[in-house]
Length: 62
Image (tube, rainbow, N blue to C red; front, side, top):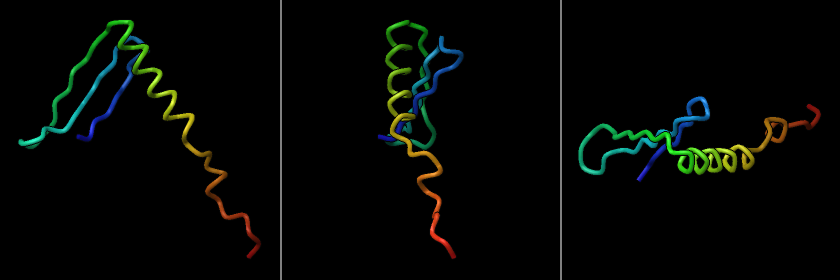
């Protein structure tokens, strides 16, 4: 099931997921420090995994 995690101001975590059978999506939010810390960790891992744009530029001479 596709979902997204958002962190707002480092204090509120949002989890949004597509509905399985109906159109649209559901979103929940939480301010629990444990949930916010977990969401922050997930986002940090994703950012770390991204390759810098310079890795995608063809530097071969034309």
